[in-house]
Image (cartoon, rainbow, N blue to C red; front, top):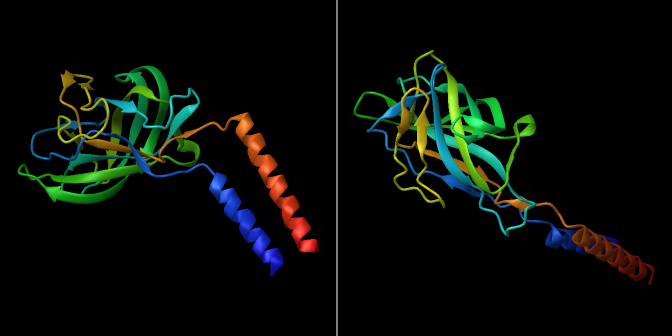
Length: 223
């Protein structure tokens, strides 16, 4: 019984000193509009939206955002859905320093019909494994292109002009590669709530505490 209580106390101690990983919103450019316009993200078209990322605690250069998902709203032919699209994050609109560039798979969520006969659907991709995404605080552009749908039909990123956005720096600016400046689109990036590289001093203190607690437990169990 004493042994079990000792390990329970040790486990609670570890949890108390573990860094939190709470879900949060890294950037939100507002909900779907669905009835104004949409911009093609097929093979010859690139749509770029600016964003400010990431909401992290503290101003340490080691602070970063662990991005978990990207979701956006698209105009689709009824019954169709987005299979994949090339998603990149750069320092300029589809230009400059590239921080991330992969073909990502998407999963369809809720949909509604608009006045033009399109289904306006939320599509989401997850950043995990080899597609994990870490961003330090700053200004970026997120670009979508080379979209592929189940039925091979065109797909259009919903224009919402950032109405109802809830993030610092919003609404986004936006650019389409063949037109130039356009109103911005509906999208959201989720993160774990941010994190930071552990300080060596903190690791030493944590290790000392663990050793001290373990020693105390051993003494108690020998009584």
